[in-house]
Image (cartoon, rainbow over all chains, first blue to last red):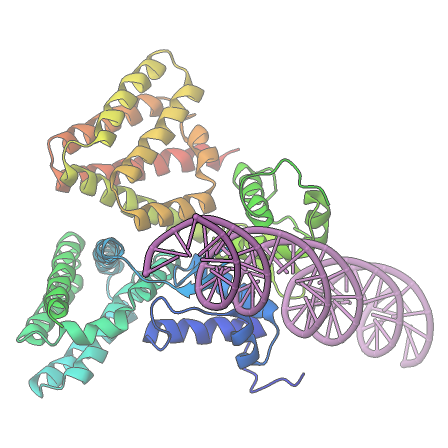
Amino acid sequence: MQRLAAGTGSRQERVIAEMRRRIITGEAASGALLSEIVLAEEFGVSRTPVREALKQLQTEGLVEIRPRVGTFVAAPSRRDITELFEMKELLEGAAARLLAQRGRVREVELLEENVRQADLAVAADDRAKYAGYVEEFHGLLITGADNTKLEAHYRMLMNQLAYSRLVVTSLQQPGRALQSEREHHVVLDLIRSKDGDSAEQVMREHVRASRRALLAGLELP
Amino acid sequence: MQRLAAGTGSRQERVIAEMRRRIITGEAASGALLSEIVLAEEFGVSRTPVREALKQLQTEGLVEIRPRVGTFVAAPSRRDITELFEMKELLEGAAARLLAQRGRVREVELLEENVRQADLAVAADDRAKYAGYVEEFHGLLITGADNTKLEAHYRMLMNQLAYSRLVVTSLQQPGRALQSEREHHVVLDLIRSKDGDSAEQVMREHVRASRRALLAGLELP
DNA sequence: CCCTCCTGTCTTGCATGCAAGAGGGATGCT
DNA sequence: AGCATCCCTCTTGCATGCAAGACAGGAGGG
């Protein structure tokens, strides 16, 4: 069998990456059946690497394998979502604290540049662009905590939330973008002044606020 | 092929559970090679379920699979250990806060019983017994946070630390048991008085103290 | 003596075939 | 009509065979 396109690593890694992407973006609908054999044919590989890929996605919480029945895209319950936001608050708060403790590192400079650009996007009322900066802001915070375990587990949890898709929704709330950006400024200022305690506290409040904005935007539609 | 002993679930689940146990207890030495074929023969199954089990243990951070080379028991680096303790501090602190917010639930009663019994063990200078109560205390705290994601990720991280084995070591430090138990009392009191902020703060200090006691006990031997 | 290359053997990666459980739909009975 | 039951098909779970990369050790040349 020919080696197609040669996405970087092994066959199963390609399958993992692509399926993860599909689930996170919502291209694979929540609750949908993922048949090993269908995916195998689609990727041009045998069932084995597909199987192992799905198994890994299960431990990442993205799919649910019901033995002898089928593998399905995970459908987070209301409770799951609450828990995930609790974890988000917790981990991002801790990241803010850790970054503040590290002092003036590269990520702080990148955050400064981020809020500068984000300010412009808000002023121009360009929500799509601002959503991108929001994601970058949170990502930089996590990376800046300089703790690989924290980062790995954070990304795993946010994948379960399909968070990237949600950001846009929460910014639909009138005035949320402006408020959000103000909160980013406060957090960054506290980090720069090395006040880890306050940075953590404010970051937590920021996450709670963004969660409220999101849920408000999700209620009716 | 006969069905041996019939550990509850599928073959691979049995392999996962047993290998996880071996790694955590140290029965499988850090860095040791885990050959699929050897394990397969040992468990009386084919390579397939063994393979899938090892793959899952990899995503749990317990083994490292080097492609085309072999699968090895993970050997945490010094940095890994630092990161794991950071996560421990973070997650247990958050658990204390969440439990305090929940008010008077079953886990609080169990914690009260735990410190009562643990006090006796300390008074009798029975360190092995006290170590058991320490594990239970931390476990109850996590369970009491009532957040399944937090619990799952916490257990994953503590498995990487092989924490159960470490508790005993940290209690070797003279006076550590007494001090530790005092700290447990303070945390529990703060939880009972629903002071989440302080409970989190004190719990974090407790984790840091236990980490120091542990590292002090590990330096020389 | 030392360095290089080659080969044999170990490892995992993948393909494939078969078995067994779960579920749905058709069928026959009441 | 309504309901229980049987069977057929779909799914995954597991076993096995082959291929290919990695690494050690020995042979040969400098």
